[in-house]
Image (cartoon, rainbow, N blue to C red; front, top):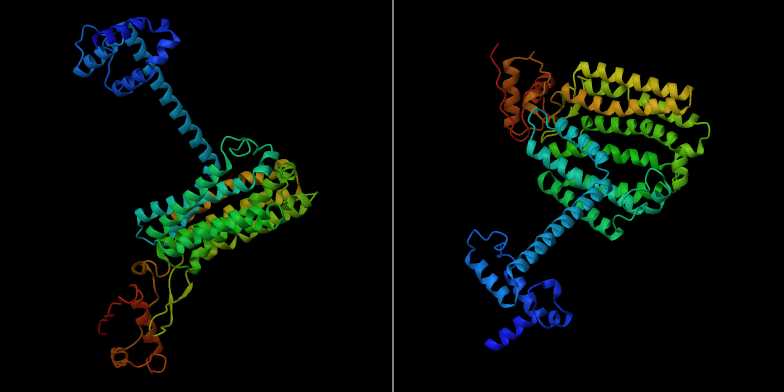
Amino acid sequence: MWRTSISLSSKLSLNPNSLSTSSLSSTNYTFSALWTHYSRVYSAAASQPSSPPSSPDRLRFGLLSALGFSSSSTATVDAASSASSLALVRDLSDSVRHYGRCYWELSKTRLSMLVVATSGTGFVLGSGNAIDYTGLCCTCAGTMMVAASANSLNQVFEIKNDAKMKRTRQRPLPSGRISKPHAITWATSVGVAGTALLSYKANALAAGLAASNLALYAFIYTPLKQIHPINTWVGAIVGAIPPLLGWVAACGQISPNAMILPAALYFWQLPHFMALAFLCRSDYAAGGFQMFSLYDASGRRTALVALRNCLYLVPLGFLAYDCDKKYLFIQTFNLPTCYCRGMASGWFCLESTLLTLAMSATAFSFFRDRTTKSARRMFHVSLLYLPVFMSGILFHRQSSELISGANSECTIEPEFSSETLAEDHESLDTGHNCRNSTVNPQARRSLVACASAAPFPFLPAPSYAAP
């Protein structure tokens, strides 16, 4: 046994660089096993001889010495191990940075953040005065994931088209930085996760809107871009759904006020994109996309579409301010209409009108002088319009409809007598049908107005002071 160890030690040179190929091959398995077992507990004992090595270090140092390695050779091995570990960490860091960058570009993160902003605005508007911040964060996160999935699938379907366009040829898929199956897996994962989050933390209607919007964008709008110019109008519908999604996530229902911000998003997108389509006509033609501007050599019809949709934005401020808006208050007795105040104050009506007229002025300038300069000016103003509009409606917002009923201002008609009230209460207590009874309509309207201050079925008993 001792002779065998001496023989093996004599075959291995003290300098690892001078080892022969035959000797290395004969001890390869033994050295690999020992190195694997002790690599995590060995420290550079040879490089610091003044400090006493620990027990695992002494054991490993003794085993390596038994194989014929000196302290200098063990230090060389440790240096190689450290370099290998650093290289592994560097490769891992580069890989994470590479795929993180690819996911960022596939998701079109800046565009997705705009979608999240519109969805969050809809959530706040639909919340009334009591905002659920946890629900707001979950809604924004789910919207972000669904938007990232839709944008990623859009690029998966347009690899060949993007490769032909100057501004898109460096995207991850056309440039070959990520494979198509990898991109599909990423898009599917975040899409399912976002929809599930909305379903769990918000409601099924919000999750359904998110899933429908993803399908509309990826499987209808994207193919239409290569078939017919109507794709722009379909894309405007896609952009209008996120604020409705946020509203539904907050209150669980769709109401007339819920359509104001989606309408603003729909009409805003058309002048915004018409300006972009006019500026990038050659690029869209090279990519094979059927845009409206490609069939309009003079640009007149493109500018007219932009101007017309700018004018459609003007009434939205008045609709948000309308104090006499009526909503049906449906309950067991089919009670009459309750009058509640609008979504925003009169200041928003004024500001929205001025903002829309400013954007319409740039559209009219583009219509008169169809040049790249005027189209770019309208495009830049359209970029400014949306954040200012949403900020204004949030700043001037008021509790609306029946969402925050305690803050709704309802019209109450006090001109009735206590005898009439007693008759009304008696009629309700005996179970008579309100529509067939002889209850004073004015008194009935007053009861409904007061009762609407709380959500059904937790209606308070109205109390009136005797005259």
